[in-house]
Image (cartoon, rainbow, N blue to C red; front, top):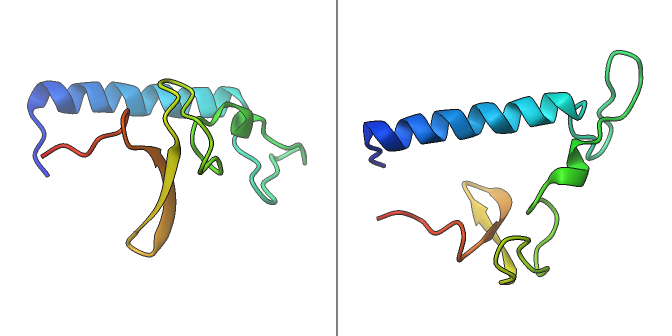
Length: 85
């Protein structure tokens, strides 16, 4: 809910990095995504949490948790992705 200027800058840079990696990998084909040439993207191979509820976190080894936020399911690590207060 509150983010200092330095935190906002780190978040902006991280979002740019993630988007750049996704583009470099041709996007994520989770169901039926295809690029303009009809090919599937490969970015889903690099996702650390998506679809991995119950599996170990690639960073710390703790079990990934599935939760619902605003009627959308998400998977996260309760240790690495702690909610700020």
